[in-house]
Amino acid sequence: MQLYQIRDRAMASKRAVYSVQQLSNLTGRSKAVSTVYLSRLVKKGLAAKVMKGTISFVDDDFVIATQLVEPSYISLNSALLFHGVIQQVPKTIECVTSRNSLRHKGIGAVYHKIPKGLFFGYKRHSKAGSYVFVAEPEKAVIDGIYLNVYQDKDVEELIARLSRPRLLALALAFDGRGSKKIRSMIK
Image (cartoon, rainbow, N blue to C red; front, side, top):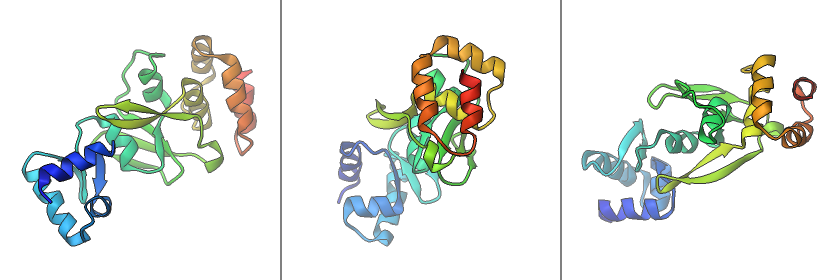
């Protein structure tokens, strides 16, 4: 396969971030051959190296952040900015995942671990020829309460801009540790 064909096939799938294994699955070639393809795609300028063994065909940090660690979605202040609820740009892209917390300095993304029972309330959005997973604004607030990112004052200000019935519905959908705290801050 030619490098341009690989790029076109990758972008046709709407996925933008590929590991060596994912590139191998896309091309039907071995991991060894896919490692060479990965290197050549970067050298030709058809893709950018995100980290060792991973490339991206788009230059959009939101897209890279949601596809780099799976499962994950953009939440907290980054999601609120995405939806236009707040105007202040956070210094890092804030994501949540059901995997262990981590920080990816290369793209400026932070991944916070949440329980699997709280991993809902996000949607897929088209962006940069690919896709991102972003929390609904109300769910971003619930994630922030769970992770102790928002204080009472912050929650009051955000609730005034959001749908209280939707917040309550999402809060009631979670019944794990921390659910009482979430419900008490929303009411």
